[in-house]
Length: 360
Image (tube, rainbow, N blue to C red; front, side, top):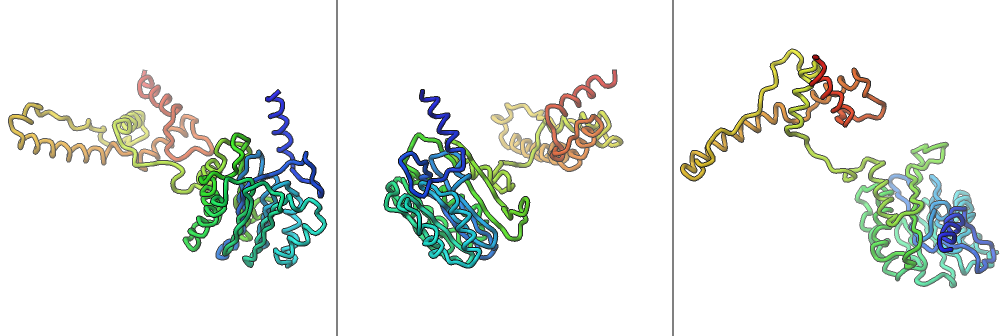
């Protein structure tokens, strides 16, 4: 029975959720916290949100290039997102937009909305029947709002972090994610154990996006145990931002073996001298006790020779990458999307086969 109920909830929440003008106890709601903001320097507008309901991106966050951002939540009327942007596009300031949207809404006390225009004007509304804790906070170029939270500290953490990144040159998308993360770290939505999701939208008038939507960033985490962290991972990875992966110079005996094999089969320094063997340590270890100074001098000399050998032969450099790519091309291992100098299981298998058995 429980599995059936969970499946039904997933289907229901997966639809475009909208509450009727007069809410009933059976209406679905997005209890959540969100942040709407602009970047005056880049001309971007953005909205980011997380909640303990799946597929939040299909209802709550709305942005439009050159207009602003809207978040519509708590017994969500999805249409308020588009309508709010339309009114702001016509020059109606956010506070007046709220009044127009809610004027004939008999369920207004169940609603929560936040919005900002490109002039930095903000407005937010939290109905009296929102689940506690519920409220909002506005500051320069942003508004943050939430309901059914563990406390006001969630909203304050989001706002404080967003303010702390102002003027740093950090992209708006990243500022939004990190601010939301700060709120999540304070406990966020207090309905523990339910489905969780997060979404981010950033509109940029200088980016055509897809189909002219001007969305420079659009991320949906439909359901995840840690949706904000997953949204952050997706952003850093897809944008290629520093930190999404670890990397370092690659050097070692396996690189030496790679070059030796490539040379033997004619892809690396075909006409050059054979790759030499690495330096060997030949001093009797007992000298370390009987003649420490001699041992230390020999060790220093060995290190110099070994460093020189590794610099010359054990580092995976551009020349070796070119040789690998040539081998891959000749053996039909090169495919669109492969990174330069890819050494994978297929390459190793083909190279070992030709190196050990090719001359038979």
